[in-house]
Image 1 (spheres, helix red, strand yellow):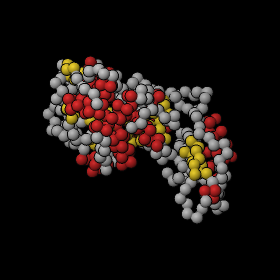
Image 2 (tube, rainbow, N blue to C red):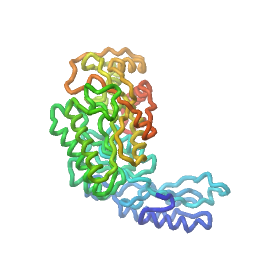
Image 3 (cartoon, one colour):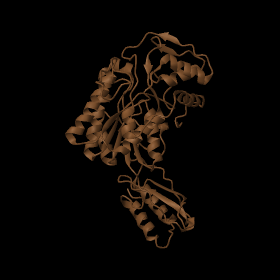
Length: 421
């Protein structure tokens, strides 16, 4: 969207005022922005749950008296006419001093919904979209996610993707251009113990997202699984064209969801895409949970405890840092074309090798406890990522030792929810 145009409502009023001031070379915007924010606050309360209208409006960044010469930025979108008013110096206009600059109006670049946006990967992705000045709405039931991970600029709608009517209501209200679908049941062992619940979250939930997206013409980026999809007989590293033969209900559900994505592309001429991340790790990943071997091991070692290795430690994984995964999502979001891409490093790392790296980074002796291998888990896994480089211009850039170091710093800092990369 053009930076000196606004989608509708109050943003367009300010846009017209800015254009009117162009001839004079400057425009005083303080009074205008104050009036617009006052109106917006009265009309756009924060959405915390479908249909809710809390008494306190969304927090606005209001400048009561913008000095002439500051850049006024208004972000607006179809659903929430004015989302943000900020000021900053405008630089780089030859022949003009800051006091002679036109007030500049920024409208939202893209309206994005992130399902599972309060989760480990999702919250980092939300931050990345917000950093680009995109408008972000988060759909998360907070069963495993944390609202504290979210930037205040994100709108949180607490609901499950299995609740089709509520989900459709939110999508119809926001009318996003893009939906990043990360909401999922991600525990392989839980899927083995309760495959029906896993299928409800990962298959039915995805169908609900597809239907809601179809109603508003939104694209979907679906977060599948590269670690659980390919199966024991897949060549290593595994290409996207390898026939998936999952070893767990979780992998089966992700494969089934991918088939629905492809069906909707064919049946409804959609342009949805699939990303298959390998074993993602990084800050904000629960070090006390059952999934996420890197933060679990780091937490144990830093506490002076012995990490548990299931099997003999020879099982391999492709560990990809969360910042690299977020970069892949952004690249796919901007690509605006359907496709399926592995997101990993292409490198096999055994669990024993991971323990050695953690020992080297922390300077501590790692003495693991060995336990029987668990059902549904693969012996080898690594992804071929050449297609993502060719199509998206994406490559992983974070080495395992650097990623482990970042996790250790995060754990030593007390595992804050708002930790960055």
